[in-house]
Image: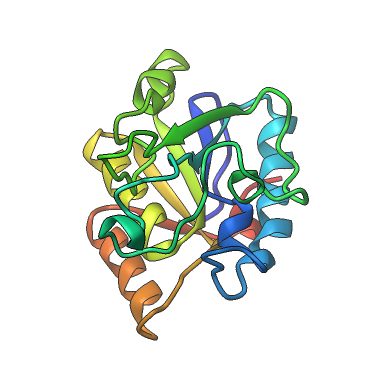
Length: 194
C-alpha cells in the first residue's frame, strides 16, 4: 500500500559514518550501496519540509565498547575524527538535526534514543511517524527502531536503505523479523507516494 508523507513524519538516518563504510575501522560490507537510496529519502523529506535527524557514534578515545577497554569492537567513530564524520556522499541538508550518542566513556548506546535528546526533539516537532534507515541493521538500526516503537512512534524501517554486518549470515534478516515482530513496518522507496 502506498505511503503518503505528511506533517508529523520524520526521517532518522542511523550512523552513516566513515568508520562503518568502505575503508573504515569497522566497515560494513556493501554499506556504501545504501547511500544513494538514503539520498533519495532525504530529498523526498526535504522537498516536503519534514525534519531529518542523523545519529552518530561520537566516542571518547577510551570508550568502553573498544577492545582496548574490554569491549567487543575495534576503536571507531572517535569524536572529531575523520572516521566519525558522516560520509561525504550523504547529502544531509544544513538543517539536519545531529544526534550524538555513546559520548561518555562508561556507557555504550546502540539506540539513537539512549541518553540523547532525540525523543524530546521528535516531540517538539509533533512527530508521530518515524522512517529509519542506516547502519547496521542488527545493532544500531534495530535498537533505534525498537526504542521508537516502545516510545509510541509509528515506525517504518527503510528496508532498501539499511545494511547489516552479518557476522552470522542470517543476522540482518533475523533483526528485520524481530523489528517487525515488535510492530515495525517495512518500506521501500517506490512505496512512497511521489
